[in-house]
Amino acid sequence: MDDRGLMLQVDDIHTYYGESYVLQGISLGVPSGTVMAVLGRNGMGKTTLIRSIIGFTKPRAGRIIFEGRDITPLRSHQIVSLGIALVPQGRRIFPSLTVRENLTLGEKPPGANGRGEAWNLDLVLDLFPRLKERLSNTGNKLSGGEQQMLAFARALMTNPRLLLLDEPTEGLAPLLVRALGDILLKLKERKLSILLVEQNLKFALQFSNHVHILNRGRVVHSSSPEALDKNHEVKARFLGV
Ligand SMILES: Nc1ncnc2c1ncn2[C@@H]1O[C@H](COP(=O)(O)OP(=O)(O)O)[C@@H](O)[C@H]1O
Ligand SMILES: [Mg+2]
Image (cartoon, rainbow, N blue to C red; front, side):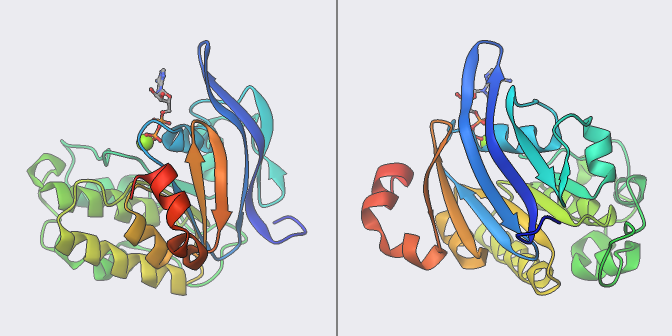
């Protein structure tokens, strides 16, 4: 961790797809043990931010610091092995593997600086009881909501210190959104550091300690969730609500 207590520090990154200039100088930090929300409409660069952090699409300029270490030059698998887990948008699980296989494939003990109780299959299944009933089902037999739970549970099995969630509530029925919220709350109580990308404003406001809004590859607003909730102009202008 760096001297300001940041788990993750994104320092003026510029990310491109070919000639397309998408992230135009993004800086933000995730303080240790907090939930940081990144909001913004479709196509504003939220997933590209996640891809830049995890190393799928490297920024052309700027740096990404994780626990005080510059991870910008590292490859994705190295970044993951340092303790960052991703629940990607669209819940990429392995359709032909069983729930149990999906969960145990990426299982990792907590890292040297890991704090608190480590996640294992039993603990994760306590958190996601629905998956317990489906352990021997293959991924493609699960409902969309169950697949999202599985993607989430699988990320926890790697015992991350930073969790990246890319629109976890997308396409979920209200009941499942609430279930996901309960889980997020439990992780927050355990002081897991989380970067939560969302379009669901209400959900993000409910669980985050701090919010950023992305617009066309730039951070256009940063505040507490309470302050954003009261700022009707910013909400209308950048989130269309
Ligand atoms: N693989 C890609 N190649 C080219 N352009 C892309 C690619 N992925 C995303 N983009 C473009 O980058 C911009 C940001 O996309 P994205 O980060 O997915 O936005 P968000 O997650 O906020 O919806 C969009 O204009 C999108 O069309
Ligand atoms: Mg996206």
